[in-house]
Length: 83
Image (cartoon, rainbow, N blue to C red; front, side):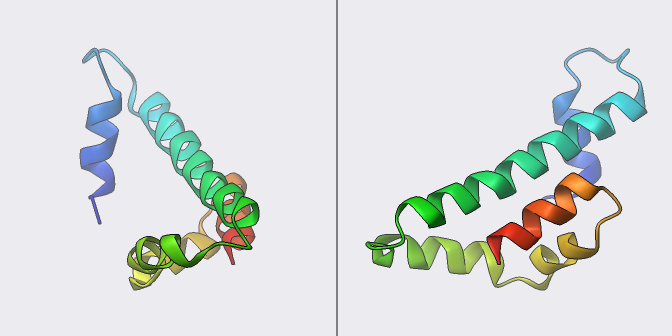
């Protein structure tokens, strides 16, 4: 899993972006990614077999499930929806 500080630096095109704004961008992207996983799972529920291996790689590491206890409500709810 990519370190959060590394990802935050990638979101900052200019070095003048405040750290708080970088953090908010990171949280929005993370929440969107979790909701996208939920959308994929709910859309392909009949023919999910091609996606199983990819999703196992995402949700198998213990780090994924820590998002369920995240301080940001969007991230927390996104993780719960994937369950």
